[in-house]
Amino acid sequence: MASEIFWVGGLPFECSRCSACCRHEPGLVLLSREDLRRLLSHLGLDFKTFYAKYCRLTPYGGGIAISLRETKEYDCIFWKDGCSVYHARPVQCRTYPFWPGVVDSRTDWVREGRRCPGIGRGRIRPRAEIEEALWEYRRNSPVLLAAGADPEFPDEDSILGR
Image (cartoon, rainbow, N blue to C red):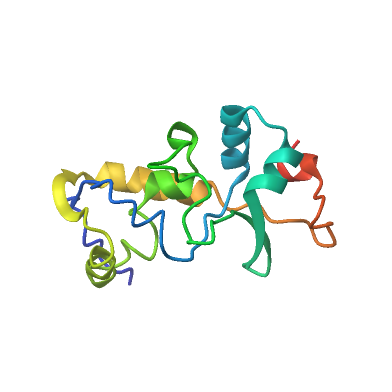
């Protein structure tokens, strides 16, 4: 039997702009093809330049995924008194905190609320909005390097799905 959705009536969340999800702790911002396309367009960069300047590789799901780099202070590479790519930010950033693992149970939601001051506050986000965020998060899975790909110079066409 499937577990009951605890957020059927919605969940209170309002981003407090504290940037805790973007700074001070090591983490991963895994990039999908759509994220890469959006960021390349927004920044006006070619893939090789963007990859060399802003990306790192990380093990993920039995493969190697592309993640954004962090500063030595563990801030997102794009955090500069706020998100410098806000309108092109990755799906992982756009959909937080409505991720699998955070909205799977009330316990998970409360636990995440200890890290994020916006959880449990503000307007009630309706079920449809939460479902849309979950769908977008799942639809935009991280791009993985092909087996045997050169991590220094991955094939742009296969990464971007051309």
